[in-house]
Image (cartoon, rainbow, N blue to C red; front, side, top):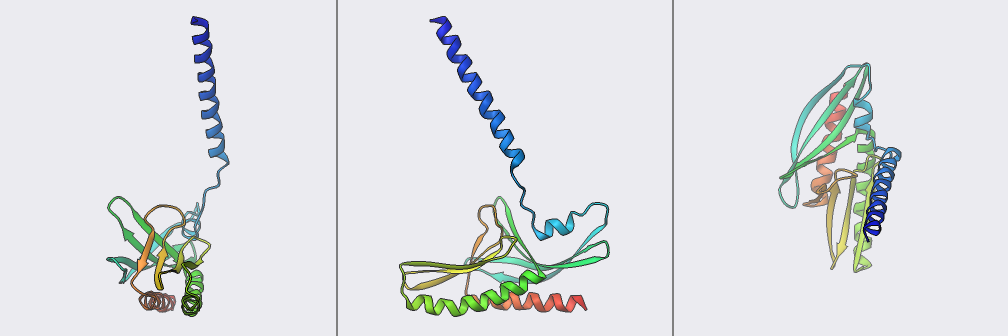
Length: 187
């Protein structure tokens, strides 16, 4: 009986050690997602400078999110990002949308605005239509019960980063304002 108990404990210990070793091996192979902001700001051997220009808050269905233009100077290069920041009780979500991606988001929003009417006419039980940047920022809408609801998702990974937008015009005004401010700062 005692040897059976010892063998059982040895088997359990072996399985536990194997599981721990295997899980550590998986973590080594996992790729780390790097945004454009991460890529441009983490260059080694160069100085990085951040300069923020505050913009009006983005009105959400519930509350608001802070917005700004962040100019990143890395060595001799300058990059511009439209940032949307939503502070939560326990964490903060931030989208850093690089200027060329911002232009794509503005184009995509125009397409989405045209699609929402066609999609509503089809009267689906549920429908979601969205555009996603390479960094994981999303803009889109969902339809349910004959109503459209617009949203943005700030970060590719993480919780509480999806924000319901008051309406698409509020978002369009904010994006166009960010584009104009970046173009002014580039001069």
